[in-house]
Length: 514
Length: 108
Image 1: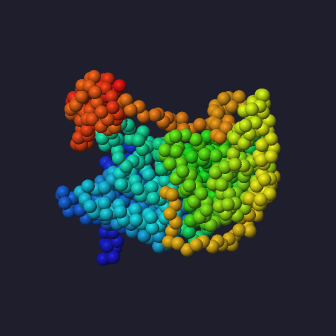
Image 2 (image 1 turned 30 degrees about the horizontal axis):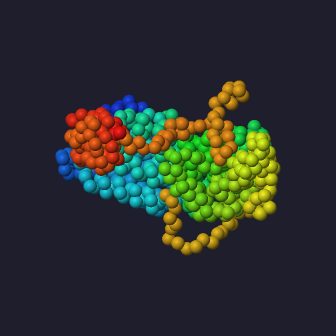
Image 3 (image 1 turned 30 degrees about the vertical axis):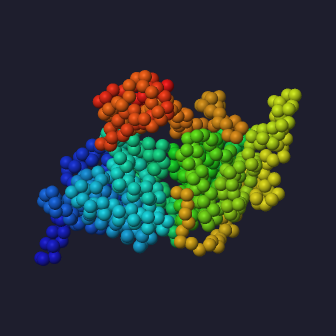
C-alpha cells in the first residue's frame, strides 16, 4: 500500500517537527514560567481552529557549521485561525528552537503570514519570544527584520496588528511591536529594550536589571510602549480575545455588533461628577454610565492615566472613548497623555470607529521638564489627530474646558460633529481664579483689602463666564443637556452620522508632528 | 476605605491659579527638577577614565583652557574650562575611573 506508507511517513515527519526544540528545551521554557509557542497559539485561538503553514521549512545557514544543525520550523510557527469566530493570521516565535533566533527562513515565514493577513484583510497577531538576530546568518537576518518592519508599516491602518511580547524582544526586533497597534506584555516574562543592561552599564555606567530596564511593568507604566499588562499568559490571552471582539477585521469592515444592552444601574452619570471643578472623580464611571452593560475596555490603563482611552459598545456597536481623567494630575494634558490620545484617535479613525470625547480639562501641565521634553510638539498631535479624523466625532463637555485644552479636546473648531455640554460645563479661556487675577490685577492690587477684592472678582468672573452658555451663544456648543440625556443623545448622534462624508484636500499624506 | 482616608491621599495641583484636588502619578513625582547650570563646577558628561590633568590647584584658567583629558568609549575628550577662574579643587586623579555626572573640577 503505497499511499498508506506515504501518509505514515507524513505523520512521522510532523511528529518530529512538532517537538520543536526537544524535551530539554521545552522543560527550560516551562521553568521560566512560559508556555511553548504552540501552546500559546492553541490557548489563544478558538479550539481546533489553527491551521499551520510552513511546518517543514528548514533554515538556510551554511556557515559556522550551521548546515549540520536541524532547527524545526526554523524557530517560528505561522498559520491562520479564529478568535470568537473572527479570522486572524498569527505567528509565534519558538524560543525552544535556537532561542527563537531570527534567521532568513524564520523571517520569510513571518513575512509570508504578514503578506497573507494584508491580502485576506484580517488582523495579524505576532507572539514575540526571541533572543534576537541569528548571528550566524549575518546580514540575512537583518534583511529579515527589515522586511518585517516594512510590512508592519504597509499594513498599518489597513488591518489591526497586535504584538504579544512573551519573552525577550530586544534590539532591532522590538521595532516590530512598536510599529503595531497594540502591544501586550506579561509580568516577569516580557522584556523589551533597544540596548540591554550590560551595554548600558559598560557605556553609561548605569546599573539596572532587565526587569527594571524594560520589564512588563516599566513598558506599561513608564514608557507607554505596551498597551496591556497582565499577571499571567492566561490573563494576557483573555485580554487579546476581548480586544479582538471590539475591533474590526480591517479598515473596510465594521466590528462585529453585539446584542445591545443598557448600562448597569449602579453607574448613574448624574451622580458621579462633583459640581466644583476642583474636585476629583473617576471619569471611567461616566463612560460606564453610557456604554452597553457598563463594559468599558480600557487601553494603556497604567500609563498617562490623566487621560483615559478605550473601547465600549453603544447599541451593540464598537465606540472609541477619549476622556480627561480628573482623578489623576487633575486631568491635564501633557507629553504622555497627548501621545496616548493622539495615537488612539488615529486608530479609531483608520478603522471607522466613532470617537466620543468626554471633556474635563484644566489645561496643560506646567513645568520645565514638560517644555524641554517638547510638550508643544506632543500636544500638537492631539490637535492633528482630531482635525484629520473623519469618523463621527461626538464631544460631551462635562465640566471645565479651559484654554488650549478646550480647543484640543475635539472642539467644534476641529470639526466635531456634535458638541454637547452639561450645565456644569465651564468653557472659558482659563479658570476663574487665573482669569480674575489677570483681568482685574489693578483693582485687586489697589483695593484696601486685596484678598477680599480678589474673591469678589473671581466670583464675578465665575458668574459671567464659568458656564456653557457663552459658547452655546456662538454655536460652539450645539446643546446644553442634562447628564441623564447623555446616552440617548450620543446614540442619536451615532445614528444620524452613519453616512457621514467629509471633503478633504487631496494629498499623499499629512505630516503629523510625530 | 472611609471617605476621610480617600480624601487624604489626594494632593493639590495648581494649574493656572486654580488648586485642584487630585492623585499624582509615579512619573510626575519622580520628575527631574531643572537646576540652573553652575559654571563653577565641571562634571563628567560620560563615564570614563582621567588620562591626564592639565591644571593644578590654585592655577588661573581662562574660558576654554584645557582642564583634563577624559577617555571614554575609546574617545579622548579634552575638558575645557567653562569660564575664567581659579582652580579651587581637583576632585579626581590621573588614572581614576569616573561615573557619569561625577564632579571633577571646581573653579572659583
